[in-house]
Image 1 (cartoon, rainbow, N blue to C red):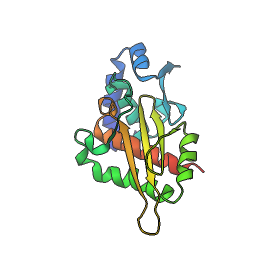
Image 2 (tube, rainbow, N blue to C red; image 1 turned 45 degrees about the horizontal axis):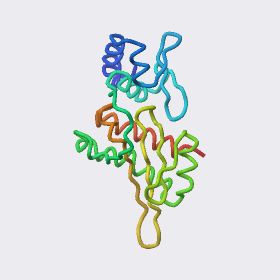
Image 3 (cartoon, rainbow, N blue to C red; image 1 turned 90 degrees about the horizontal axis):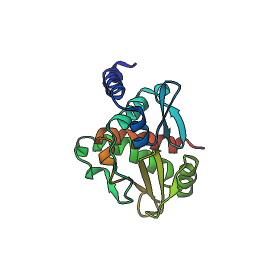
Length: 186
């Protein structure tokens, strides 16, 4: 464990051990096999213990803090999440700006990259894709293409139920990891 993540991971693992495995799996659409939890992450099954440090902590928080509300289909901006204002500059830097840089002049590329991660097209902006970063916490990436007069812009939106699943800091990490994954698709 990396020192910056060690204590957070230890606490989350301790909390997870106290929860009923079947209930956790049913609530989070996860699985438990071979002595460990597996989560759907960006379209693939991943063993929680084998992720990168930031992923592991995010997944553990998802398994332990998750809400029970279903996806509503009502999208909200990051700033509508309680305490998001403290993390908004980092959120914009790590989740929004990479999307603008990579897809601001390639809106078709956003759709293709999102589809490769199991996403579905959404009807916002010039292009939008709802990516199932985690089964109960999709993230919608929206792009408005730049032209000669206006620069490209982007937005990252969450289903309103996301705030019941993860705190603002974790949602910022979730959106940024999703953005990096989208940008990495060739």
